[in-house]
Image 1 (cartoon, rainbow, N blue to C red):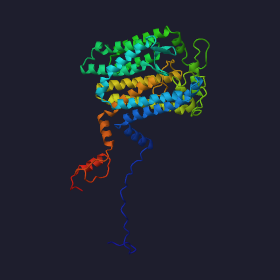
Image 2 (cartoon, rainbow, N blue to C red):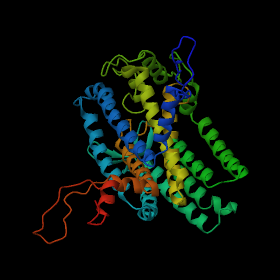
Image 3 (tube, one colour):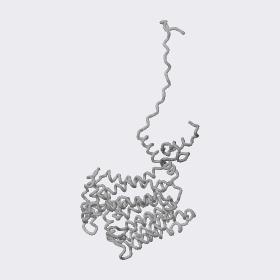
Image 4 (spheres, rainbow, N blue to C red):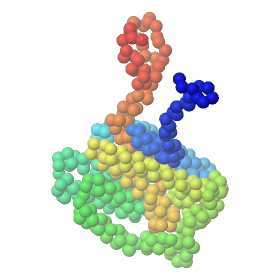
Length: 453
């Protein structure tokens, strides 16, 4: 080894290690976005959104019905919880209908289409029979069941049109008949117009608008040509204009769009203006649950059509945005179910139910905000009214059944269902092993041979 000038051995310098490139730090926002995207694309996302969203809307609706209806009940010399108890009973019955519909196979749903349509038409005809039908708020669309219980058959007409229309269009698609315009329209449009005529005999234009939206939703999903779609829309619009022009009450409601102060005359806009007052006084977090001022006789229909205004006053902007977010999630999940299925009936039925619920929510909330005329339709799953709640919860059960029926969702649900106490071979005296969850890991372990470790 050569020595240095000083006689000492040269100092060997340690070789430099190659620089290891550190991975770039991932942006927290991007990481959150990727995790949310993966969670959003899971097979059970639509199932959980529909089930969780509908339950949250219904529970929050029960709370707001109890808060908004107390003063109205006391003014009618009734107990303060009168309307809440009736709504809770309807929610329990609707929950049973939702569970039954979510467990029914698709074939049974299709088999129920014609009986539900026939029953709805029969009840809507009975409404017009003197002595059987009764008028509420000027609309002859109710049948008394005895005591304080009433039923509005036109609400069941929405469910009937969805099921029957979806079954009809699916059968015609299987036979490849939808390429002809007469098969696209007949008999779907004539039957829908028959239901609309029966509803309009009672003067309920709000429900007629929802039924028209369902009809257009089914035609859109069926792939109706633009000319055909525009033609039907023009005819419906012309009929709507005539019905509005010939009714002073409807013209007065149309004149109240954007009103901020009560007026003198027929179109006083009292309800619309006090709905705006309720929303404006709520602020960011509201005045507190039960602390609404407008429900003390100033705001008509505080627990039915204008319950969203009371929600804004008591829960504030945060409460109203929460309700909007729940309806948006429900609408997205319905569109996702309709878009991912290969079954034509499931696609049309899911699309029809989604159109029904979202259109009705938009019309109700738009009227409360002063952006649309007051149509007199309740907020789905939220407003008081058993006749509207029961068919809506059955329709939600349909969406849950369709979401569960997807192949990926079925496989995911099968891996999450536990099975307890499975007996081992060897007869009744054999020793039982510990109870285990039926997961993919446990099934893989059970599939190994006895000698494998």
